[in-house]
Length: 109
Image (cartoon, rainbow, N blue to C red; front, side, top):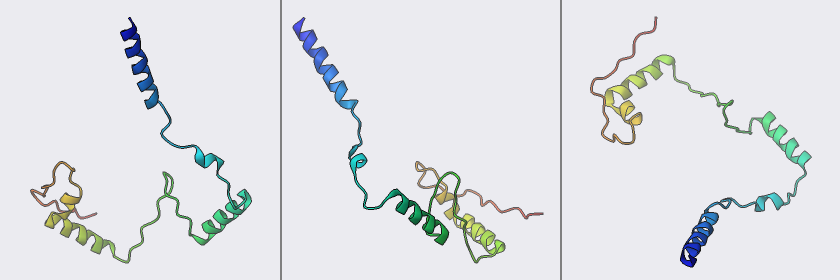
């Protein structure tokens, strides 16, 4: 009986140790050298200057290029011919992935 009770207590104690929060709450008591108004003003200024980079579900920075559409399509076709495109898009479990037959881009109408 005592042995069963000791085993049960040991198992419950071990399970409780895994249930603890993994992150620290120390950041909640940190003090700042700036006021909330100063932080908001800096964020607004960074937004106006274009220095604020926020990547989220609703924001994707536009891609800028000097290549023409025809040059981009030619680069894509060359990557497909060389097998680079297939290797970049291969599954991790298939390190030797290559294109069996090159796929050509259909001309847009």
